[in-house]
Picture 1: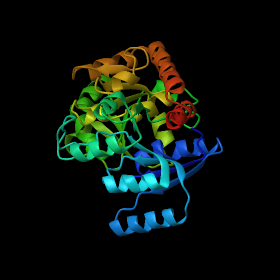
Picture 2 (picture 1 turned 90 degrees about the horizontal axis):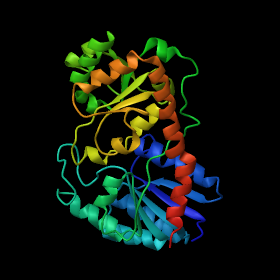
Picture 3 (picture 1 turned 135 degrees about the vertical axis):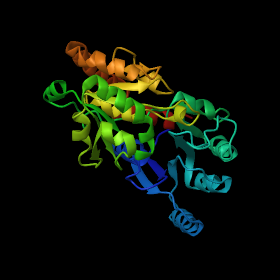
Length: 331
């Protein structure tokens, strides 16, 4: 199938991480192939949706592909999109049939039925990792496509200041700060320094005693990442967290930051333990792996280089975009 036009319907604003990293950059890459890409936020209210469909149908323009990004729609809405496009694609990079509080395994939970309706009525389903792809079993066609990273934009620091300074850091939304509580104390005991936290809100309670806070901002993000020597990603093992696609790890690695992450879900498919990062099985290992890197600069540099190579070879936006176009073009 030759693709000339794509309608990409996002779940929220351009600042939303899944839109900012999984849609906008790929759309810009696709345009380079001479393909027309219309990226639009899916209307929230029923009235806005009626206006949206009426306007698109009135324009009498039929898109080759319509990608629904991570938004659960009614069957009627999906069929309306099939009027607007030759092929409807459902893309998701989270366990959207559940949430952190419910944490239902595939096949259960309040949202499961609606999720299955979406994947079974789509022509193609694209999942961010293999765990999510398994949940989409029964769809006409399922493909795995990791969230890509622009490795030309995310680059290592040009100096060795991180080696000399040795900063253990964490970047993420404040809802995950609780997972750092015991880890931060353990790491400060090893390094003698607090960990660097970059988030949308500062840590509270005991965690604030073992950390230094810096507010996340898009214009500062690259510098904040480059300032880390080691990047942490603790993750509990639940049906919800197994759906996570490890994008934080990719950001660390692309910037030459050695990741230490929980051995959970897609983390295990990104990191080669002891080669380009460490996978934590037991709580005490956070401090142990930090200690290894702190006391072996040669190993630290080797792993930082390997981490960068992993992302460039497997997750760079150019290669992921080409893979996406092949998936979309399938009959």
